[in-house]
Length: 272
Image (tube, rainbow, N blue to C red; front, side, top):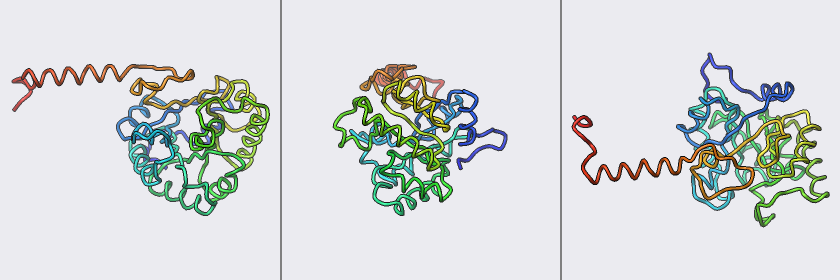
């Protein structure tokens, strides 16, 4: 588990279930480092996702595929150290669980032991169900992920909305039930029609967390750098920007450069 203070009531997988049961929405954001995770946790977010989106946001890759298990563990360690309240969920990176279930368990155990996180997230349904079951049987909570699955982007060929056709929607519903039956604690639904996401959320007893899946899910998740306006080159319909930190930081840095060039910084009060 994450390193938490004794006087803070932690968010657990059980609490997520309690939140769904009483109709309380679940808030979830990504974080990848100690400083940002501390800010997110202190603001009251319920779940912090150490997403493999770190491949894009932190490493500059165009997809999530290149990020390694070692890199994910490094990011997750930093997040867990900063987190006192939120449930810390870590994405299992591409290649760490798709091959076979024994390899999947070994990857999962390593992440849990080295990062002190609370839960892992895996993309896929029927195709990975054996790995999901084996990991859960080892006592490790799993959050599923269906709909648009970024680790399968080369198969899709685009980031368009998934499950718009009847056959794909039917498979997604089946996969959601399979994940619940396997023991998953929650499922992320990414970029699917809102009506379908609402239907699945009502059918399942476990929480659903949406991203680009409408308001009928039990919670919402966004990438922190997107919602804070640090990443201005990504503007999907589902993204609401709550700040423009790119502009604020750019102006502050320009001001600093100007002060250094002019000799204004440091002044007499800023030296020893």
